[in-house]
Length: 370
Image (cartoon, rainbow, N blue to C red; front, side, top):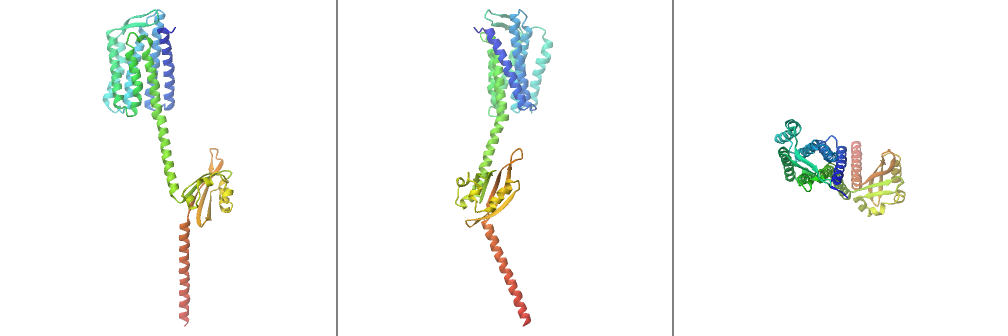
């Protein structure tokens, strides 16, 4: 049968393992980022809090005073509230305000510096354990005051995260709710002995780590994918509207890509080309095959071809893998028919001018002789 004592030990051990795993996870993701460092401190506090809670129970079982370890639990809860406040204000962008720093530093100095010197006595009294393994205690006035002060930090943190729930800080709100509920449940006599507060802290560690990874790792990946999709859409728009054919071939000369408005000029579709060999589709165009083979050998190449009354200029480049091995060829073929026609017209016009100039010279020579 799982007694409250056994359940508390299981919960505490689970919290230690979870918090330790989340600590390594956030430090692995970005060890130099301040937000991750604050989160690592939070995870470390959860570990210390869990160890102190476990030590309280073991001390009671061993007949030793649990007061020193209970003080560790209280300090763990206090630091947890302070670190939650630090996380909430940091991710909400409030660290630029001096008042936020002053509140945090005042709490830190009080709990770590002033309180241990002012209070040599106990935070709680009347410790004991029931036959089924549930321990009980009663806060002394100072312990009750400190608990209310801790709850204030939790409450302010929740308010800040709620106000910024639509921003990056909003991702921390579920974890903050979990740990705050756990702390409040801890003072209920019927539920307090089961280590539910530390379970709430462990759950908050998981939710916080998830929020950080989602914002700093998964969201950027999603944004990158969105940008790639947008760039691909724009590229496809350019390809489908410009008089070009974008193509790619594997090392054997089989087309793996054929897109562009230039295909429409030739009354062809991508499906008519992809999957077929360049040696088949261009068997009557040796200049194309020669350009492909040169590019496959590692040398960029060009070709100019006449197809169905249209002129295309192709540029071919080798595709290399990470080992610098050539695995295919990529290229673009541009419809230069209008340019060729313009060049032909210009050439014809120049020829006519040259003819007229010769005629003028010959005529002048004859007039001079006469």
